[in-house]
Image 1: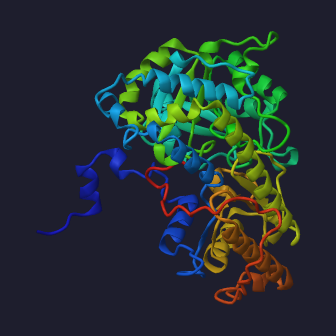
Image 2 (image 1 turned 90 degrees about the horizontal axis):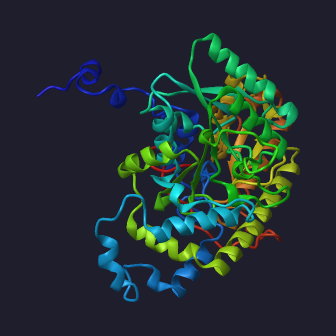
Image 3 (image 1 turned 180 degrees about the vertical axis):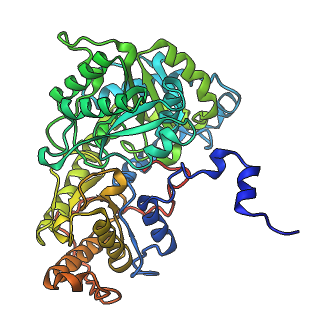
Length: 485
């Protein structure tokens, strides 16, 4: 039996199955493929690609593992917890276990320093923040409608919010001249362009703290955003999945705090928060996503839709037990911040030794690295040339700014919380060697194959004096289908 042509295949399958809406052809995902095909291992494959494109928090697994050992009854798959097996394994209300919703609501408040409170009856479950974002998009917009999204923004939003919903994402251009802050002028310009193109804008989506910038939105900016969406009568989705990764001042401010201020006038039906335990607790594999909406209709619709992406009751049971342990959670949040601060200090210090700067930030699992001085010209094409060299020659998977819709070529997101100390040291030595050799060579030579196979990588194993984190294991898994990174 002969094979069918690609055109015939398109006729047999749906538009979703055959279109490119998933975004797998993005450089962001191409870097993942390079890593998957040649993953670094200090013994088995020391010249492999080091994964610095994965925003995964592995710095505190030792704390989680210790808690699990001390609380075996929290799992229904242990001798101590098996008595709960039947009650947890049978069908449950898709609203979520009451203890789970209460524990998540309390945790969300604790992460925000007690400056905001959350009603467990407004919590809607989703399959990770990917599922939560899509669920919310389905509730708020129709195919062809649009959301404004300040750029640079997480590349997979194009998949998460658009692929199956048919909703458009329209970038709000932010610039390095003011540290990529969101301004009223930029919001108005993006909205006006959409109006001129007869595109129906249904909302604004922001990430706070930002992925990829690692910065937080200050109070004035948040007030501006709330005023803007209220004036335009459009929704605000505040993606706050990195809320507990803030590792230095200033403190994180949630939109939930802003709408409680006496002088802020806002229709609360327009306010929605997306949350997750993937980043703050390091649980992306548990697929715990949360929609918290102040709109009753969205909560009701969302709960009906959540049956397509529920969190397993086994996971809910374990998580509710862990989050209810106040002493553990307080210690975890504090220690996680300390370890993230140490990693950030190490990577920015080591990059500065070769004249490479990063955007000043205080949150997230990554830094926004400035390699503009290594570009022959300030173009996306030159950024791609540099990125290919870093992937193929230096053997590092870092993500180019253009994949985040950044309009200024030369910025790269570098993740630093998904590896052990020795791997981080090796990665930094590779970057330093590459930058030194690039600056020693004339520009044309730097664009040649000079570095291919010739980059001298140090194999010394010195310990970094500030490296206090416990060893972590690199994740071998790609986010192309399942994981939010």
